[in-house]
Length: 452
Ligand code: PLP
Image 1 (cartoon, rainbow, N blue to C red):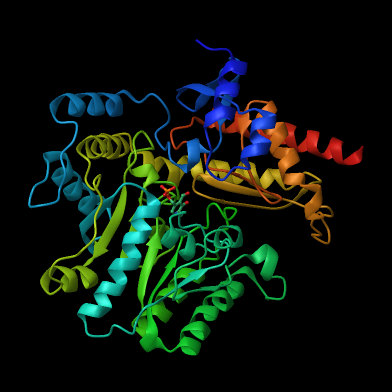
Image 2: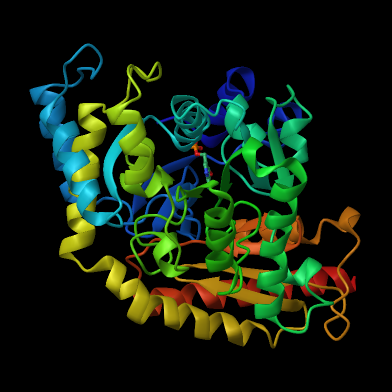
């Protein structure tokens, strides 16, 4: 076993990490995570860390679940790979498509597999444009998305996303436009109420479609709860109104369920929590609890009828579409979630408990707002509570807080000054308390830093 220093030296010499300033990471040294069990990780120094982010929003069933390990091992021995091009496939891919049709909302009877969420969203771009081509409306190309959204970092995924830092590096593909996100804390202060703000934020879509011309708009895509953007939970009024607007203009509605899918929000999918009926749904992450890469697109009946019955060959796919080992792990993962009642427990017990404990964090002098949805939560740090004045961004208060979390055995992410968690869905209530205690401690340490 190498020492931490040896790991760091080799890492700095060769490994370019995603979304990382390579030079500054090499100077600081990376943290090497060596082991995981349940909701905890250990690093190469032997420090135990509570994983408040489920890896990267994906380890929904926690680390070390034997069913998933066994499924991978068995499938690796039986058939480690075969593709589903050229009229072939494998039993796990067929069984998983069947099971996904069972656990997703009833309009979804078909699935297209990819290797990740980004590839799933690339598939969406091609699929919605293909849909309108087949219907003889090739001018319907524009896809509307939202600022601050994250839909992946391939060229199409990054273009769909609304993050300027991504757009600035390598450019964007044409015919994607963005509207503002439903972020009450930032944009909602003029509105009479949270729910009124939801209707107002949805009306920005109506206005944008009208401005472009509905006959040019192919689809609208959004995450039910914007995750990487800062766990921005929309008002209950938002999504049903978005649905109504899409229906009115005939625009396809796409739910990016890469984070919200597989129980995170307290239903199997975020669209169920927020009461809308998408035509297409992207998934990844929680489908295998991150144990192995897998993503894809659930194709609703409206699109399937056109693509299956009239579409001819769909010129799209990946070597690892329907990878048998990934599908076998996904089957074991979904069956575990079903058998253990994970989704129901998030809805009835864990999510409400997290909401209660997060609400208590509002007492802290640094906290301007908290939001939760199922097992995801956000704590907005502010300079002045009463006026909800935010800190100067150059202070990087969120990063200071994140540093305290990291140093004290908690993984919590900072999006600007919004601290977020999305822990595994298999926590005990005592583990929620443990996480809240650590958050409190790190908020106190951050406050103490600010006073110096
Ligand atoms: N969509 C959403 C909502 C995501 O949060 C992510 C990743 O965080 C993606 C898409 C991209 O998924 P991947 O990193 O698997 O390509």
